[in-house]
Image (tube, rainbow, N blue to C red; front, side, top):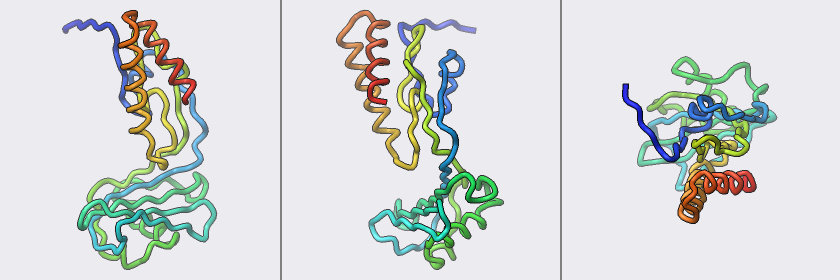
Length: 191
């Protein structure tokens, strides 16, 4: 076993931050309401150079399809937690996911020959955050400090903002605990 010391430890390990948990930060979250099922597929879909959104007849169900490369597409099915019986996950639910995508208006011919190229997984869209993401020499940035609904896709920009704020505070003050406190206050004001 080896002991390592540091002036400051930065936790940047995502919306279910293990660092936040291990260091005793109080995590807050809105209740799960919006779920997003995502799947990477190979196929031939006439999506153009756009994100294609489909709003289904059923309340609280939306789909998105976008091309990532020549024959590689990302499919999403967004739904209220009560809209379908269970979360979609793994190979066993791919057929059901395609059915829900069709129901929201995704053209059937886009899905007919689509082949999964990654796992089907469902994520909740609940906001999660830590108030005052600094304590006892540990600072949290990005989704570890505060994660918004991932369907808005702002996680990376929030992470980069946090890193910039922390960097600026550390450059401005040689007292790193005080600088980290400044960062935490700025983070909370923005969050």
